[in-house]
Image (cartoon, rainbow, N blue to C red; front, side, top):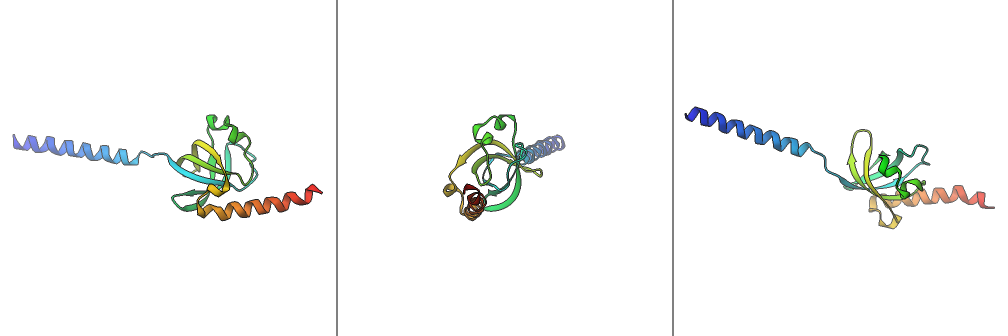
Length: 130
């Protein structure tokens, strides 16, 4: 009888452990900030510098159908600053929501990237104005 109780108890403990592991492995949405670094050719895969938890990496921003219909995404250009919600994967950052922000609202780790991008853009465009 005790042997059966121990067996059943260990079974339930193992199941609780497996449930905890699968819960921990489920990815939650994270908030990220990004600066578009190249002229977007393909609107579904945008190259950008992305800051997640204070570290900056080069990533592709991966847009789903509902993001492609977003006005912010339709008007996306180089040097745009974005606040994103989504999940990070090996392919890039899968976006669930996007919001355009002022470059001053970016985290400090991206402020320099945005400033350099805007200066470069101004130097490339300014000679064409004359």
